[in-house]
Length: 230
Image 1 (cartoon, rainbow, N blue to C red):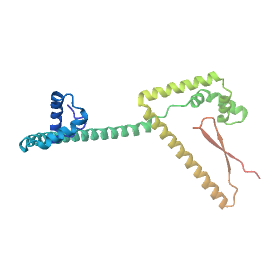
Image 2: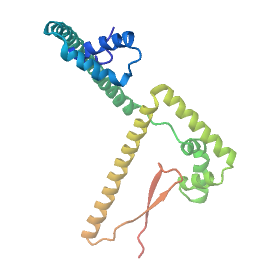
Image 3: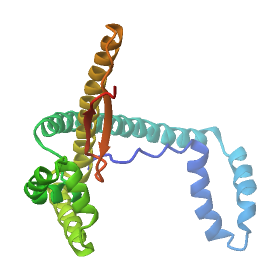
Image 4: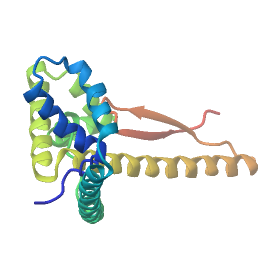
């Protein structure tokens, strides 16, 4: 058997003796209150011969030797488990890095809606001289509730398929990596715009005025550049 649990500490010579005396008192003095057992047995221990004590000392030493043997086996087994767990964690980490690099996170209800309505939004945007994202926002806001719920259900089913394939924790890590990647991309773009404006100001030019248009989907933000006013 594998030593899953640590061994119990071995009893001392006195407690080995104590256990035997409890059985003796129950048999020979059944009316003796249990609260008086410790004093009665303690008095008996004081009065036994050194030869008899040596017998219990020998029994205690044997139990101690067995205890340390079991303890060593338990520690060795725990170390094996620890090494195995570390190997599993390393393997899982390597697998997760591979997944992060090639697997996109499951799409939200809004992004699924965008996939379906993108073509129509592009056509409307040409007619209205608007950005397609703005048109998509308008369509999404005015979408019938049952149609919105349909996209939410599709997103939920998609996420469940992802979780079944990769595990819920892995899906969260994939989404976290995607958010970090998008944040870094936006930060780099923002820094480039700021540097451009600083350079333009230093040269005496008027900097571009940048406005931000945010969609209903928190993951989708686009920027437009407006002409500076005279």
